Length: 391
Ligand code: 13P
Ligand code: SF4
Image (spheres, helix red, strand yellow):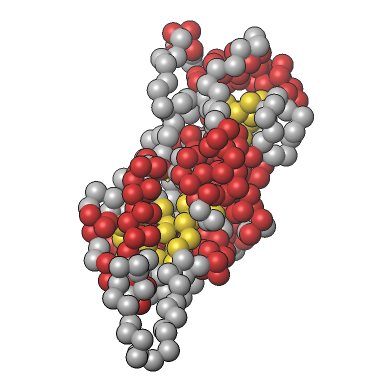
């Protein structure tokens, strides 16, 4: 998304000035305003959030204040879209910097997903048994034994990670699938596999694979990766027919940086360390770690741990540093010593927050995120499905 440059007055603010002006604007707006902050936001932003959470919690928190006129979402674009879809029409959702996207969400677009879907439908509708009954297939002679009734074509259910554009959520809603987050992916995928025979999971192959493994599926024999830039996603028809999981070839550039070597090195330097990683990490990292789970799970696990315990964490650095500050009785560090901020989350700078809030005080709405009705109808279906199935 294009973000116009900040007015010079805001670009020139010192950190202390921006902070004081955000507090003052917030006070003036009172109950008209709710600020939501994702855990990966920097401290100078998260301190102003009325609610903090991971993407699942914030999708629900967005609905807590129907009386508020404005929801300012300090997170990334797909989160603001989801908040707009889930809140009443009269509420205005604002993203302080429209350039705060998500590189993973950008790895799948509607054109590619539609092409994948039609390829899969064609291949799955032509299982050898069904092909034999196609209109132009050879008919059995009247002397042949009783007609064979073929199994119906396998049904595929689309599941999109919440880290995706609203039009992909709409595609999923329209095709009988659901949204999931890293908190509820196993429940959502289990549900999908009760509705059909296979899951098309996008855009994060790692969350899809780690979830399938959690549910007892074999990544070698039951999962294939769909590369949108290759014919049939880079697969044979036979492999697509066999697969239980078709995993989109997308990833998070932050969580992909974590490695098994980093875990081994943390265990060497801190023999009592416990390793805790996000399920967007590659499978060898998740398997080598002691625990894995969503952002909210990571926080709760550290909170519940014994004083004096040591944690190496594989997730975004703002959250890891905050956990270290909030738990001085524990040793907490990031698995990646080179530091790995999410550059798009980082685009929510205090100067942008100050700019949107002061505009609201003046009665001007800037940076509204509004999903068109024809998209939001089906996207809401998919989000509501998640909230119902995973409640
Ligand atoms: P959570 O679902 O844990 O909030 O993760 C969102 C995200 O973007 C992680 O990279
Ligand atoms: Fe997207 Fe990864 Fe940033 Fe999350 S951490 S918003 S998945 S790029």
